Image (cartoon, rainbow, N blue to C red; front, side, top):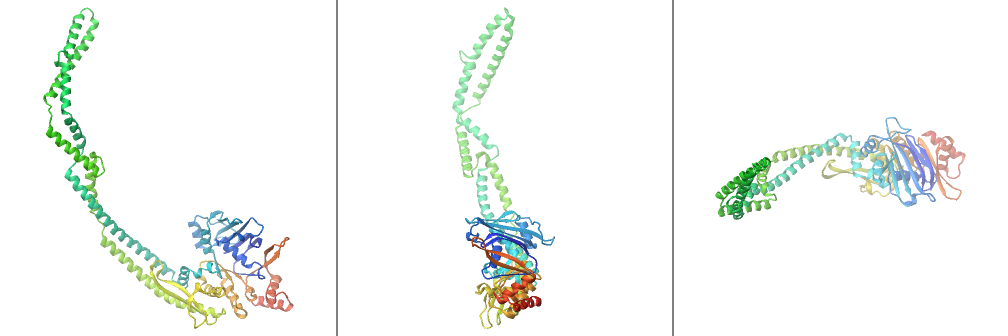
Length: 558
């Protein structure tokens, strides 16, 4: 429910602060006084797009703030969107509070806030749809939206539980169908992957790489490829050490003999002689090892060819499968493991059977919902049609048509509201009704009949008195007051019959500033001030004792 509205420099409103009560509130005033500006301000703060001319002339920016108490749907939206529900005055302690504020600068820049946190226009509109419904403005009527029409029908017929069950069944069917489809896609992918793995496994198994093979065969290839150089170098080293005329062993033997002869003259040479002796022994050992190496080495051309062929094969396989030759044995093992894993396919038949069962369950529930909707549609059409007769739409007819649609979370059909202005007329979609007043009265009839179906707690009716008067106007006022018992209702009206039914009466006046600029002001009326306003609406500029008496009678009669 709307608790308070604050307006600054908006069109011709300089400043305005209003608090609102529950029930039925009427807004009256002379034409052009700015009654609709209050509705425009509410639509603005709830995300309606507007131009920079909305800022009052001479002001830097316009600002509108509205405080609401909100129901469960709005509270859930606030939490899901990251906005905390705040406190406030004027609402039950159990109700969440929300303060919505929006500013507009003369340059066209707009900023929105929800409970002090920045909000986009889309967020303001989404929240506004849960708080306020303006009847009489096409772009702001929930009744023109197919989803809202279906929700109204289901709620009017008490079908909410069935609708939720159908939505849950559809979600289950969709999940089961997706699981089967994913399994089919995965199976096709696995078949292609398995084929590639088999090709790789066959190729590697023919090659038969062994762990550690690459390091050993690479070393053998280097040794065989340099066999001649190894023999030549080894022979030269053996000559230098032991077999040549000036071999190291012969020369070191002479050094050892000289030091042995001198040791008797100086004992300090004993350690040196011992070291030379050790070196002599090591040289002799090296010579024997070199001789052994030469005796057992030979140039093996055939083996070299075999080794080089194997090295080339390992290199080629590594390039083909994009790995190092040393990794081929590991790749073969992992390929075999992957083939075993892919062999364990999902049971596609079971998944398809589960999807078929889910679809059958969904269609059974959706068909039951369709039958219940058909009955509810006839009942709702008859009730709204009867209400239209009291609202200056004699002979008018309202229909709820169910149109076949693809299976979805909402069922097997979509709902469409249609209306005809007279018995013989062709019913047309509600969204195409040309008359704003006619549309507002149809909306009024639906809103009163399906009051519990509309989740929005604040309703605004504009132009509901277009083209009516007398007893019909009194009926409109009575219906609005009746609706105000379960919803907060606002109505902009020129009819005293409607205004006299209000629980709260706000008059909108237009005056001029010192410079002649028009401004709009409001006044909450009570007592004699309200009598005077009803009398003005009855008699125009000349308010007589008779019109005042009539006004008192109208107020007393309500």
